[in-house]
Image 1 (cartoon, rainbow, N blue to C red):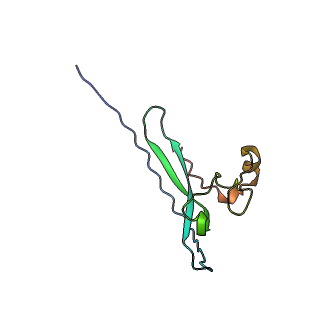
Image 2 (tube, rainbow, N blue to C red; image 1 turned 45 degrees about the horizontal axis):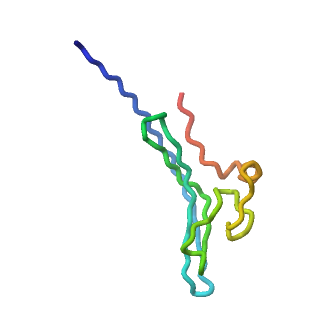
Length: 105
């Protein structure tokens, strides 16, 4: 019996540089939070693709140890403690902020 296994691997890499600065005006603890987007690659495979975005938020004082409560682009207030509903948030996310992967034919 001959068994053959075909394995296709697709790898793509895109580099984008984002610069974030968190001022510490009141000498408090400061934290920088960055949003990532993650998706399943193939149903049932358990593998995932994770992409870092250029969405970030500086949090200081009592908020420094607590991550933002909203998805990227959905913050209704400056501290990201109150969120827009998802349908509204999709409208607010600028197209340039998306991190598209290259098209593979």
